[in-house]
Image 1 (cartoon, rainbow over the protein chains, first blue to last red):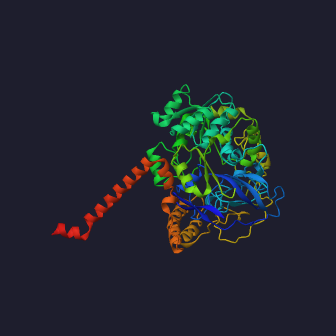
Image 2: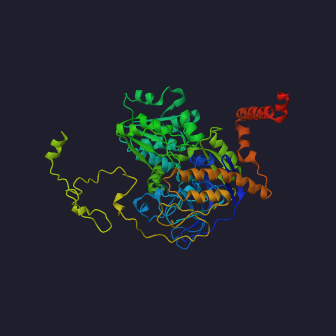
Image 3: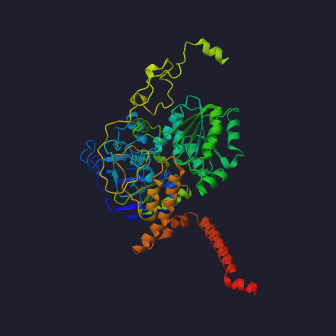
Length: 382
Length: 189
């Protein structure tokens, strides 16, 4: 089969790889119909995630047709069209039992801090991902969900990660009616977080980024107030001024390790890798939120450490909330929102690219060329 | 002030050293005066993404069947046992594999673990190139780095990058030429 292969930082290609096989009674083999490149794939692409090995296939956002199931998978059959949450979750460990499907303890040998994730380095389990024609799906009786007839496949593929992550970012913000919410990052997750903040009753939603075309998009899509931080003298002072000197009630970090905006963080975190990426967005979130406020973190960081003003977290009495999205837990609610027309994820898709052109798609997305917001890959076998 | 507040409550501090311990050394909570009197189920910062009612405070659960180990799997020392399923992509090999094996001697809390893995990733990149060449495959690096997309959508940026690369390359070349023995001889002579 044809599949994406990582060859080193900034280098990917499509190559022929062996067909995946059933390796566990709860596995399924899925023929991929759509697969996204996620903003967090760029951390792998840029060589920022430890134990990202040459030859691995990325891709944790995908839908597909079930081709084959293991003997213990009773809820799926060949021919079912499914969306596959990015978390690989057993459904029965200490954490899955509590709904923490992003923190499964039975899917990742390499690390205990994160559960298994498709195509996301060996630090997340060493699985090949969905940027391929076929993919092995472990615990297929837990994660994969049949796509209802009424659902557009383009919406379905975005329900595997970006929509639930954006929704959970807003949910973890504990937003109360009338709250001011500031979202750092106008990538797909930040866009969805801004949209979902309204569902929780936000009174004001502000999005901060430096990419103008993305700010323009979120301005109408969310809709939100938008600001380019490169046009502001000081983001934190601006946030204080626009909130009567108090700060936002809730701040969401939807950027993570690749944040722009601080030369020091860029050098230490992105160039020298002395930190787990640049944490300037989180720094701003902590300093922009009001005393007693809540900071919700869904931006992805590496496993080492970051320079953030933790003293201010203490002095301001902040609550930090963070996690990988628990996709399976959120899917029923998100299906409701989609059906009711409260969210329109597919509007974020700007590029549909054949799998064979994957290197171009990564480069477009990474360098923000051609007004790219969300690229979707379509294998020829789809 | 604090003393007044303390005096106004009914709490009695447990006598030091009077708690009862189980055979494994864990304090028996029934021996703690006032244990749990301020527990409040509403005080749950993990709402709504964690169902704490399902937390039995036990590290035991009905484990899924174990996936057969057919490739080398590196396991975090923080794991009690090998998780039931795992990926089989790109098992550790060559020099980078040796570095990865060494890294897994340390816990996830240790920087040496992650720095060795990052180092292994860079070595692995070179191994990938060598492997390609050994198979008679010359990697199409311009295509792999997305140069066609750069050409289509960012010609000015591409020209700038080529210009910067040419400047740096020219500078390095000039520096090397200046330091070459023949030049040195000339200047010495």
